[in-house]
Amino acid sequence: MKETLEKIHKSALEDIEKIQSTADIEEIRNTYLSRKSELNNIKKNLKDLSNEDKRIVGSLSNQITKDIEEKLNEKYQTFYQKELNEKLEKERIDITLPGSYTPFGKVHPLTQTIEEITEIFQGMGFSVVHNENSPEVETEYFNFDMLNTPKDHPARDMQDTFYTQVAKNVVLRSQTSGAQIHEMLTNKPPIRVISPGRVYRKESVSARKNNLFHQIEGLIVDKDITFADLKGVMNEFLRLYFGASRPTRFRSSFFPFTEPSAEVDVQCIMCEGKGCRTCSGTGWLEILGCGMVDPNVLNNVGVDPEVYTGFAFGMGVERLAMLKWGIDDIRLFFNNDVRFLKQF
Ligand code: DAH
Image (cartoon, rainbow, N blue to C red; front, side, top):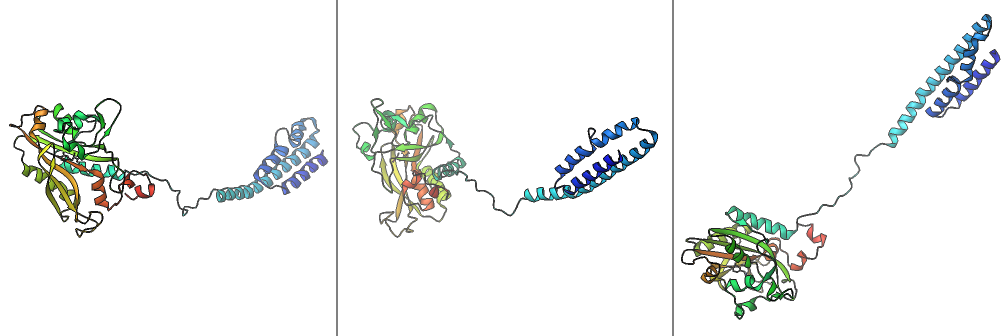
């Protein structure tokens, strides 16, 4: 019996010498110290031995158990620490590494321009109407007739219009001015609105012209509105958008739906007024049309021109964005080239 115990002890010590990991320790613990182990079996059967043997075998098996336990605990200390260090080393994070790049979308420069202009006019008490009121697929009636531009009117040639085959007289709107009519048919004066949106023209595409572009239409109708009000509002807008130091001018013009009519030019930002390719040598760039609402238009929508007067204006968004940022090709807005778009 004593020999068996010593064999177990020896074998355990040999195994303990070979330990490489905490997993090995658990295995050895299981082999030598568990309830099913040989050592435990001997202890369980002590009762069958003589008193003398009971004492010797009992104390020896306890000693061996204690020795194995102690040696295993020592090993455990060593390997637990070693394995912990390895684990920590493996999980180490280098906080000085650069983060991964997440590309962010940006607001399109045309949208930014519309927002900026919209805010300026909202600051002057205008409200914004969108094209629920004034659709892009429009009838000639709203795009032209009601705006004092009947079929044979030569002013129809000012804009090359896309006619559709959806139905007779249905066009892609060539201007946002139809929004004036929609507004005046829906609401009674006083009216003070702007309406941004897309417009379409049948033109050959170039650095300066695109088939699709954006306009912002404006309309005020009230009692005692005069040309001085028109100039005041336009000048305030120009000052806020271009800054006080950029020269601007009013030039008399013609539009069928306004009388008198004017256009506003700003000094060319490319050449500072000296004359260049962008401004065709004139030193000025036209940015908007405006005028006092023609009495015929007011009559068309049932507003009495003897009681009410008003002014209207329409500006090209692309033109305004190009001037602000010094962009020389309108097509850049529509090519969806991120190298261009991410600059704004
Ligand atoms: N609709 C005109 C165009 O596209 C611009 C314009 C001129 C709008 C005068 C107006 C205006 O409201 O009063 O060329």
